Image 1 (spheres, helix red, strand yellow):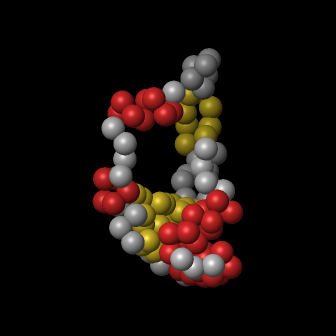
Image 2 (image 1 turned 120 degrees about the vertical axis):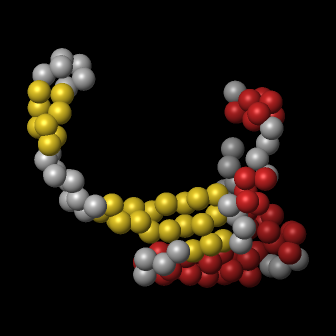
Length: 108
């Protein structure tokens, strides 16, 4: 079960000896900073944990394809260009991963 925001604030307040209100304001400021960075199509790196970046996906043209269920020829419609958000784990996050056995126990 993932931490709720209230649980996260309580844990951070305990570990940093800040008040819950101070921790909440720090998290709010962090959230606003991340949103403003990605709103400007800038890359954002949170420590060594995760990198968030905005990617532009180009438009596609209409093309011929096949219905996999029936094998019937069909036209796949064109799609407009879009903006996507990509989050990539960095070294600290990858190194914190559990072993396969531990993950199987926890996630099964």
